[in-house]
Image (cartoon, rainbow, N blue to C red; front, side, top):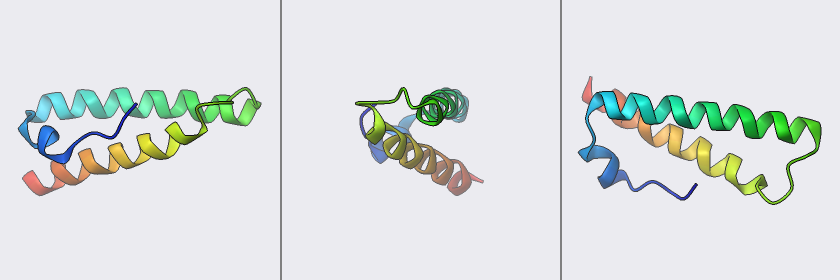
Length: 65
């Protein structure tokens, strides 16, 4: 997963942001499990990118409150 642009995320509706957040959290859990088992090889950098994307989405959600 590549870096999500903040301007693109701001254009999304709240429901779409929440769906994207759920999707990213599920993918993060999968990658963390694979990392714990030792089967994660090429995708180690994805964990950091996903965590940052989750933080971007949460920031936008909190700004809108």
